[in-house]
Picture: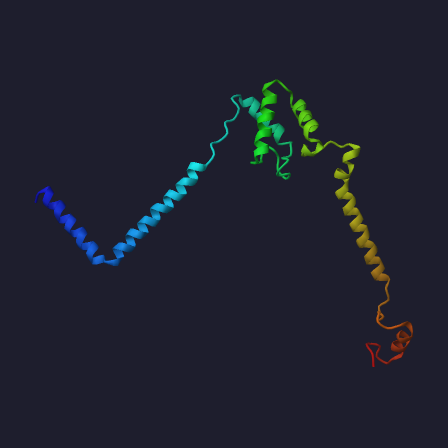
Amino acid sequence: MTAVAALRSLAGRRTSIRAAAGSNGVRARWTHRIVVVLMLWLGAFAVAAKEAVPASDDPAIEARMLRITAELRCLVCQNQTIADSHAELAEDLREEVRGLLRKGSSDQQVVDYMTARYGDFVLYRPALQPKTWLLWFGPAAMLIGGAAALVTLLRRRKRLPDDRFDPDLDPTEDDEVASLPEAGGRP
């Protein structure tokens, strides 16, 4: 058998398989088309992905930048450091810190610059100053105040008599209820 004859035989078999499949062949083509469309759609996301921002050329500056930005709060996220945040402002601030470090600023100068520009809020651990006492000691004060209120409430509750009075009764009815054989309720 020649190669041409083998190809004709193979083509004949494929045609007969399609004819035997009938509507299943149409279904298979639609499934193939759907898969292709989904692959193209997912490929569009890969095209839209951002390229990684190149790190600094100097690894020492990059390490200092990461150490400094780990101590600065992201102004957008507020619960993340600038080093951890993916917000655009955090990316800009990381680049600004890199620029200051390239110019020869010390770590403390960079922190002072950021504090002067954005206030003490940018510090993840603000300095202990009179204006930050509430920030540092406020949670402990609230905890102590809550515990004192709880102890006071429990002591007052303990002092209450065991036979509770009905708040809907006036004082004269309280005496009548107390004189009943079973002081559990109204007659």
